[in-house]
Length: 374
Image 1: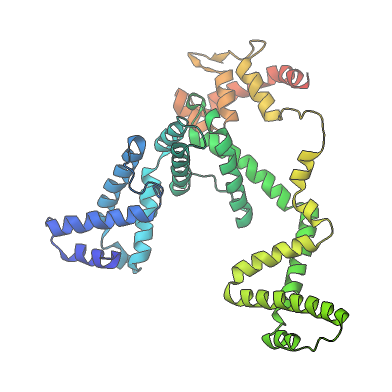
Image 2 (image 1 turned 180 degrees about the vertical axis):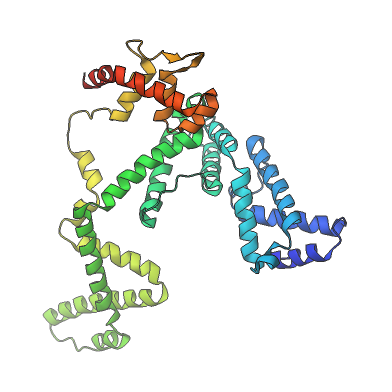
């Protein structure tokens, strides 16, 4: 029974009947399966936090379906659209900060590339996306955002074991890094040199597309029927035949699988430009150049100073709040924790927190600068 039939059955059956309850449970399971959160589970039994999330999603879906079964008619939308809305708001409501943090800590129990680690990593990344708690920024190109997400997953793969829950929330830690990646990606996208190079590649790709589309099956047949009398003519004919064959096959690919053809032609255009390979892999080229040891990033140097407090200057605290030291506040701000969250954590008004932080920062700024320079 599909979703449309289940919705009709729920609407028609008495609310307290077994048929009504069973149809709701069945629809909830179908919606939960379609979200793909536990897509690697197959027949594997869920346990721990995975089972907790699965059950919480089931219960929330059951309540949402029972309470809003007539919503699609009131909104004048299709059942499919309504189901997507139900799925989306349930995932956002259930997969909260606490669950994401538990998933991150569960992943830290395993080591790559074991099956358990891959399973946990897949669930964590799926949950992050479905929770809609990943940082969103206006004026970011869609392709830039998607590429930045891929870079974030690579970074998370390599650095998940560095997350420390005692220093802040998981989403704050993750989004702090994602924000840095987005800034770098946007800067690269807006670089005049990169824009000029991309413009040349795109123009070349369109030129190739127009040439390929002009090749017909008749041209290929004509070439096959050429009378070959001399070796030179034979070699030339084979070359022409090869070129025409490739062009014809590409023209068919454009018709049957335009997205695949578009991607392939873009790569051909990129490689056709002078030094395109070196430009396309500029990061790899830079990494292969012998160079002195890279300096530690400024943010990491600052974190090192704040954590170590080499001159014991960071332990000053807000009056009557010994736990709210400058060191603790500064580290949390570095991790992307907002003033509002800090205010709730320490039960201190935002102005008091901010003023204390700014005053003490002015006093120790020269010492921080000296430490980093040395």
